[in-house]
Length: 220
Image (cartoon, rainbow, N blue to C red; front, side):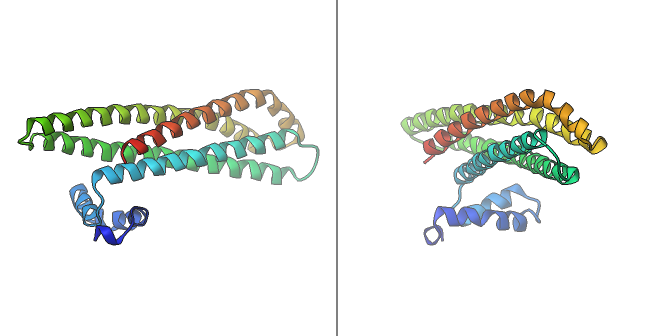
C-alpha cells in the first residue's frame, strides 16, 4: 500500500483519516491507521512540522498585511471611515485566526513527538545487539536535541504574535468606539511601537522556519 502513494499524497489524506479515526477516540487506532498507509510516527511528526512551518510563513504575511492596513489608516485623508475601519478589522481577524492556527499546529507537533520518543526509547530495549542498541540510543538523543531546539524556536516565535495582536486589538476597539478623523489621528503615536513588534515577529518567525527546515532535513 505504501508504495502506491507518494509521501505528499499520503500526508494529504491525514485530515480525512483523522476525522474518521478520532470518531473512535483512540490515539493508538489513529497511529495504526496511519501505518497502514505507510506513515510511521516519524513521518507524521515531519508532516506536522512542515504544516507549522508553512503556517508561520503565512503568519508573517498576515501580520505584515495588518501593519500595512494600519499604516494606510493612519494616512487617512478623507473618504468612507466605516470602510477603512472594516478593512483594518478584517486584517486583525485574519491575524488572530492564523495565530490560533499556529498555536494548534505546535500543540499537535508536541503530541506526536512525545509518542514517537516514548516508542523509540522502549524499542531500543528490544535490540539483542549492544552495538545497534547504542547507535539507536545515540540517534534518539541527537534527534531529541534537534527537536527541542526547534520547538523552542517555534514557541518563541509564537510568543511574539500576542503583543502585536494586543496592540492591533486596542486600535480596532478604539476605532470602533470612536470612528472619526480625530481618533484616527491619535493612533499615529502607536505606529512605531507596532512596527517594532511586527519586526520582532518576522525576525523570530524566520529563525523558527529556518530551525524547522533543518529539523525536517535531519529526519530524512
